Length: 213
Image (cartoon, rainbow, N blue to C red; front, side, top):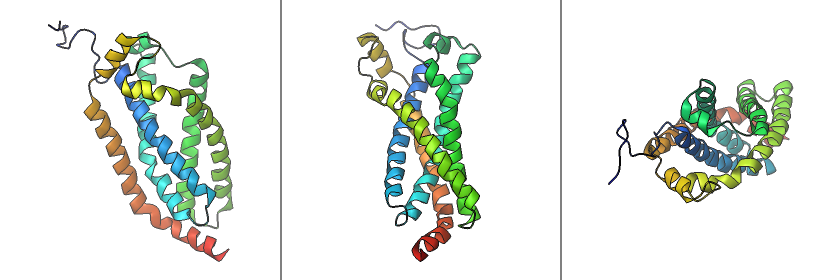
């Protein structure tokens, strides 16, 4: 028979907004972004032919990027305001704490400069240079970030045994709030899709310029 704690949850279970739930939301959003940015990278290989698709995918990723920033920002806020579960879990490794702000800033710079390029049109060379420069910086930061975290994704998302043994894996698998996490990721994708559908026409002048050249 399960022994319940004072909050009415089984002993050892985690709240939906606890550190394990937050970790799963961050990992799930990160997986979506990994796939999305890989698709965006494919468009770069033939940017003149796939410029509209490049612009569309970039706009689509705005929603998931915003959710990823929100989930990591929530963990940051809960840890530094002294929330006991987050303090017990501890902060990311020092290198990742140092790298995190650069990942966020360069992601915002790449996406933001891309949107401004769409609004400004092909004649604005300054924003084009900024977009390319921020992409180079983003690629370096994101490569380190992905190489650090990608191997942890199966353990986090599927609850497979990690360094803490089978009991920790069982707790991970029982984290509540899975439906809410999928709902948040779905809402982020729908928001990005609506933005992409509304603004993809801005790529038209750039497409015409590419066709001319």
